[in-house]
Picture 1 (spheres, rainbow, N blue to C red):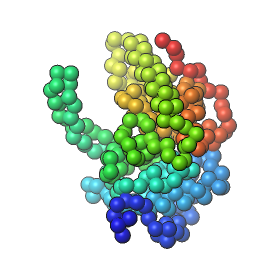
Picture 2: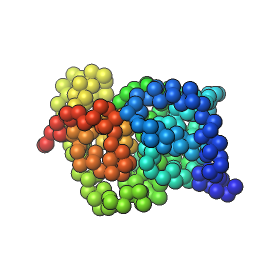
Picture 3: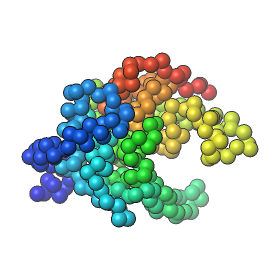
Picture 4: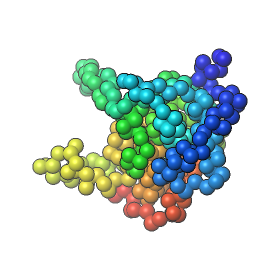
Amino acid sequence: MLRWLLGKGARRSRVERELAAIDPQLWSLALKQHRFLAGLNAQEQDSLRRRVAWLLASKGFSGAQGLEITDEMMLSIAIQAALPILNLEPELYEGWTEIIVYPGGFLIPRSEVDESGVVHEYVQEAAGEAWEGGPVILSWEDCAPELNSEVNVVIHEFAHKLDLYQGDADGMPWLGRHAPQITPRTWQRVLDATYEQFCAALERIEAAIPADIDPESDDAEPWYRVLPLDPYAATDPAEFFAVSAEAFFVNPAPLAGACPDWYALLTQYFRQEPLLRFGGRPLPPPRLPAA
């Protein structure tokens, strides 16, 4: 009982019950609804199903603002969340117990300290949030299947959980037993270099946007489209890792082409090669332009 209360996963018998309870038709439909799973072979699908069963046995789902959580919703979220740990130990998602789902975007209180030391408090709308030692919070409106083939709120937030496991949210996940070939020094070096390169490319793009175009508007999209990641990745290294994880699994070609060293490191960490699921290794776009 103590193991369950501490969020240390679930007993094997409970996982086996959840595995047997997954409806074959719902499973088949869920796989089809998430097109980035189309390239999984039979063995990978079996591994994914077992990771999904572990998640369903280990985490409780709660609907916020009157949202009724259905089996289809739980299965969809669990499938997306399980993909990053397809070949990793489920223990990386231990230490917490709840997934909270809102119907749509939700508000989170924020505070920032400016250069003068003044604290500014405000409320920000979010589509997802991962709390250290606490729940993952999701907007169903933003994480429902097939909403957008180039972003994935669920993978993003569960990447934060990987980052937070045995450490701070700093873009440096615990490498542990599953990635002994990667040293922390190597990870930090590649992360820092790629993050700085991305931020510099974003600054050049923002400087090139005409003055009569709002950089925050849809009219600026053609300029940002040349980037391999959403501009939000430049927020800090933690967000860079989470946004990179999204791209790695749902739209890997631009990331592989523009940031090959970072992409190669992610393939070693996740023990997956998503490009092969998208019909082989297509011709990647050019690397990020140099300064």
